[in-house]
Every structure is written in structure tokens, then in C-alpha cells.
Image (cartoon, rainbow, N blue to C red; front, side, top):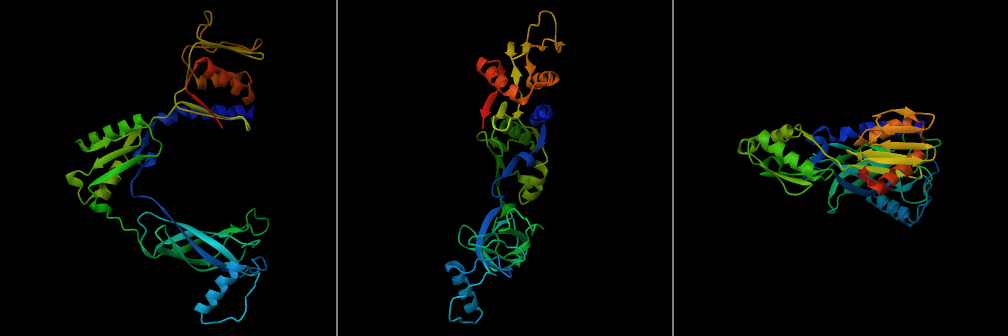
Length: 337
């Protein structure tokens, strides 16, 4: 019964998907995004939980000592050192000197990075340029003992931005706005609201995902101010009527406006009739016969509410929804995962 209540609550929220949203919550602006950066480094100071040697680790140690003016005569094998890959996300409009969090992941035989210190590590972008430098104490989130993944840690504010991604945002003459979830109806609504609010034909929806916006003359060299205004415009976003079913876990999630046509359903001891109820309308429930009548054009939310009242399990819902779709009575899509 508990699972069915959860499903019912999820279906109750379906109407939220077609409600008003701020533009900033449903779109992105071209050029305003994070960029992944990556580097190779060494974590030292481990308590015998490191790699214990290996070609990559030994080569890195030798090169590090050479840079420090030392010239070791033989290979250095230590279980207090671990080879790691360091990753981070360079924020949009990042400026030199700003800090970033970095993730440190072991790539060799280290069993734990607990208590380790990341040595200075250059972080490169996809173009091969160095955009940041990372170093600092590695944290496993406080779970030193019994950590599920002790070979992955984080250095909070462990990287400093050393190179900026140049974007002359304030000099832009146009903006390209992209929907996070492509939809023709929503794109058309965004075009309309932008043109109405800016009092002109500045916006044009190119497809279900892209809206091009010409910067009005009044906002030339004031693009930041313009974006701050338009990102707070509210638009009624639309969504596809869809039910997603995971038969392995018994999970059912529904979104969009899903309706049911006239239909009669019989499943085990349960009988449901939607439409003509023989003179009885909406919500008449005979528990002794497990009967439930619903009005024409009922919503999925109303159906689940009635089934919930009858004590129907999630396992019963799945074949009912599938049968409704096959009969053409359920207006919406069903996706099995």
C-alpha cells in the first residue's frame, strides 16, 4: 500500500509540469556553461595504502625529484604514494584567482587515499591549455573507516583558475537560447513572451529547442541587464504525456496531461468502468464487488485515486496501464525501462 501511495503522489504532481516556470529554470544560453578540465597528479602522505611502485608512479616520482634538484640513483617504490587523476569543472566566466573544487581518483593499486595530500597538479582543458592548478588535503567526506569508495576523494577549493575562457558577453548582438527539454509548444510560447515583453519582433523560434534573440538597441552593451530581465519571465512549459514503468522495481512515474477514453477494465477481482456507468456518475465505489465507476475523459490521477481506495498494488497497475494503451483508451505514451 505504501508504494501505491507514493505513485499516487507522483501523479498528483503531473499538473505542475504544465505550470508557469521562470525561463532561467528551463533554458540555457549558448556560451554560458562549465568546461571540464583534467590532470594527472600524485597523492602523498598515505599510511601504507598507496600504489607501492609501478611504472607510472615511479616515473612521476623521478620527474618530481628532478624538478626539485634531486637525482635518485634507483627506482623509488613507496606505498605512501598514489597516482591519481584530478578532475574539475571550470565555471562559466571564471576569472584568474577564483577557486574550484576538484575530485581525486586513484588509477593504480592504492587501497585508500585517506589522509593524503595532493601535490601541485596542472589541469588542462580540451585544447591542451592549462586552466587551473590543484593541490591540497584530500577528503573522503569524513568516512575514513568503512568508506564505500576510499579511492575517490575531494579537495574543497583545491584548484585555482590560472587562465580565463574569453567571452565578450557584453558585446554580443544576439543570443541563442536552448530549451533543456525540447518542445515545440514551449519554444513557441517563449518566442511570444519575449516579443511581447520586449515590444518588438526580436525573438524567433528556429525549432523545438532553439530560440534566437536579437539584442534590442536599448540593451546594446547592457546584455547582462537584458539577460537578468528575460530569465525571470514566466512561461507555461509543456511536456509529453508519458508513463514510465520499471517492471524490475515496480516504479511508475507519469508526466503531462494523460486522459482516459471510455473503457471497461477487468483485472482479477477488480472491475473498472470509465464512461457510461448505467446512471451512476463519478466515484461510486462498491467494495464488495471491487467495482469503480469513473466519469468520461477521466484523468490518470483520478484512476489511481480510485485504485488506491480499492487497495490495488503497483504490480496490478502495470498490466492495467499496458492494456489501456493497447486498447487505445489511454491518451499518452508508455515507456518501459
